[in-house]
Image 1 (cartoon, protein in one colour):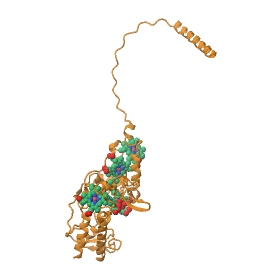
Image 2: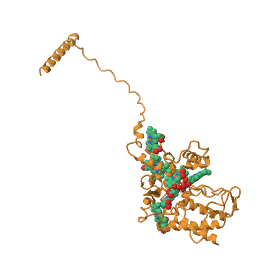
Image 3: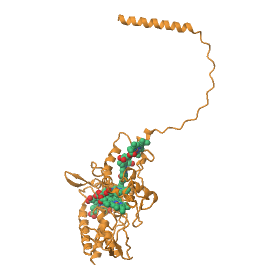
Image 4: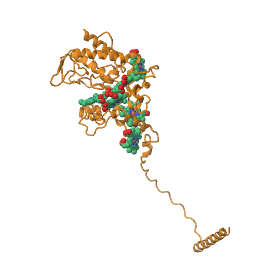
Length: 355
Ligand code: HEC
Ligand code: HEC
Ligand code: HEC
Ligand code: HEC
Ligand code: HEC
Ligand code: HEC
């Protein structure tokens, strides 16, 4: 307490001394002058871009972009490795860069080989880093797609994005029913590996007349589901659904069907072989394979008996049956995409071939 009183009196003394000096050195102030006129307003500067405000619409504490990256990273688009097929013609579907190039030009090929390819990824299907706000999640190419093979336009909503690539390529040479025989010199002749949009819509195959009628193109309920309702339902980890686009997952060592996308419409479904449709399609496809083998057109593995040295001469109808076989085989859904179309093609082709 003594120490405090001592310090306090020292401070007080110093203050009184200082006050005396200030007061002692200055005379009394004169009256204040009148206020001056206001200056002119300056021109407003342009608003600065607030980086945080737009970037954080996507880059924020949510795990959304991360989740989608994990799923996309485990989709076959990324893991399949086929984006090394980057010559101009293949790059049109197998690489992000070649795809944007040909969508811009409207051609069926990229304008050049792609030297530094990347696979289909966020920027392929969305507009990422164009507007730099959340509107960039819009689907990049949502317009209906005119199929290369027969100029039929399919409209699958947001899934039009998929149809641009998952469509038949034009077989080389193409057959024309009622036209001339053709010489095939490629064992892989056919619609190529991804004809799903044409199958879903129900178009492009050789619709030979027979006892089963063909569904109206685009008229099935599955076509109204686009691709996304079945392939992008809730995700199973990063194995199936969501942005993996995959339909099955591994569980304790066995392959299971992810039916999350089916149950809205088929509440009791347990696996994809609903009402035994896949089993029937698989049996009929096997029969068609054997008939075409007996005709000397296909080998045991389902390739055409054709090569450069020994081209295969076929009538347009035979080419049509070969197309139908490859179309259903390469579609990979064993009838699910369009049960009515697959069944009609198989039954009518087999009938026609047995005559
Ligand atoms: C830019 C072209 C392109 C677009 C757009 C595209 N895909 Fe693909 N997709 C491919 C290619 C190419 C492969 C094969 C990749 C590989 O094997 O390396 C593939 C593979 C797949 C697979 C795996 C196939 C398998 O054999 O397991 C599924 C499923 C798939 N895509 C669904 C979709 C869906 C659904 C969409 C639309 C939301 C879509 N794809 C959009 C080109 C595309
Ligand atoms: C119209 C788009 C398109 C074009 C053009 C295209 N592909 Fe494909 N390709 C696909 C799609 C889609 C798939 C995936 C199909 C699936 O697995 O169901 C695929 C699959 C493949 C696969 C099989 C991958 C696998 O894992 O089984 C190979 C190999 C392939 N393509 C090679 C080529 C080559 C070589 C070219 C050029 C000569 C080419 N593709 C041109 C769309 C295309
Ligand atoms: C093959 C095409 C494809 C690829 C690749 C892809 N997406 Fe998508 N994405 C879609 C489609 C189609 C939808 C819409 C699904 C629907 O409407 O059911 C979608 C939806 C989304 C949504 C929801 C959008 C909204 O409006 O709410 C987000 C977020 C998203 N994707 C992020 C990503 C990210 C991040 C990547 C890359 C890591 C990616 N996507 C890659 C096709 C794709
Ligand atoms: C529409 C949502 C969205 C907006 C808005 C957005 N980004 Fe991105 N950004 C993404 C996606 C999606 C990726 C790719 C993720 C992947 O490939 O897995 C990405 C990737 C990135 C990357 C990693 C490098 C790359 O290009 O892949 C950086 C850095 C980045 N963004 C910065 C920004 C900045 C800075 C802004 C604002 C000026 C911004 N982003 C705005 C969605 C967005
Ligand atoms: C009605 C539901 C449904 C719709 C709609 C659908 N798919 Fe499928 N898809 C399936 C089922 C089920 C399988 C797998 C069958 C199996 O593995 O036994 C499949 C298989 C595939 C495969 C082979 C690879 C895989 O995952 O097994 C590709 C590629 C594919 N679909 C692409 C598409 C594309 C592209 C569209 C839109 C044009 C589409 N699908 C629309 C149900 C659907
Ligand atoms: C949007 C609703 C919808 C979704 C999603 C859907 N289906 Fe269907 N499905 C139908 C309808 C409706 C029919 C009856 C035929 C028609 O009207 O087109 C049908 C018919 C079928 C058939 C033929 C049945 C028969 O006895 O001939 C099979 C097989 C099938 N669906 C499997 C599936 C599988 C597997 C999935 C999920 C991968 C699925 N569907 C998703 C609505 C749907």
